[in-house]
Image 1 (cartoon, one colour):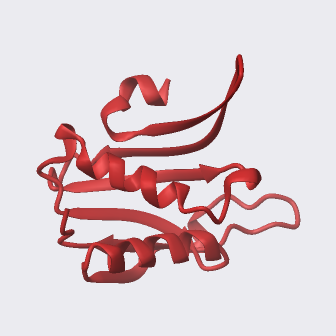
Image 2 (cartoon, rainbow, N blue to C red; image 1 turned 60 degrees about the vertical axis):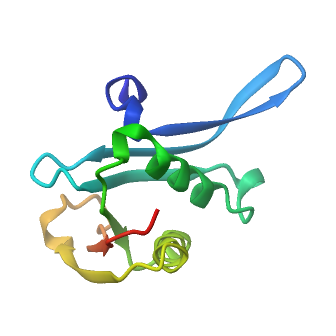
Length: 133
């Protein structure tokens, strides 16, 4: 459903082996309704077999090259402190696009419902840009 409604700002990578096709990565995003120059990346997922090969970066770059994103100057996302892969992905993306980035508190852990013996980490807002395409 997400890739249907937000197809212009989301992307799925498919691995093909003969007749077998399976999704191996997914980036979902949307153009921020209050900031039409900002692409908000909601989720990035890469199958373990595909990690460390730059696939997420390539997918983000493909999104930025789409006609629907030609007005995009900024990328925003939220990341937890422990998510090293996402931290590295977005800081690396900023560097590759020779863009500034700012990391600031966004969602405090207290606002998330508590599960039994589990708390949700706070989410940090990453704002990258302006991006050089």
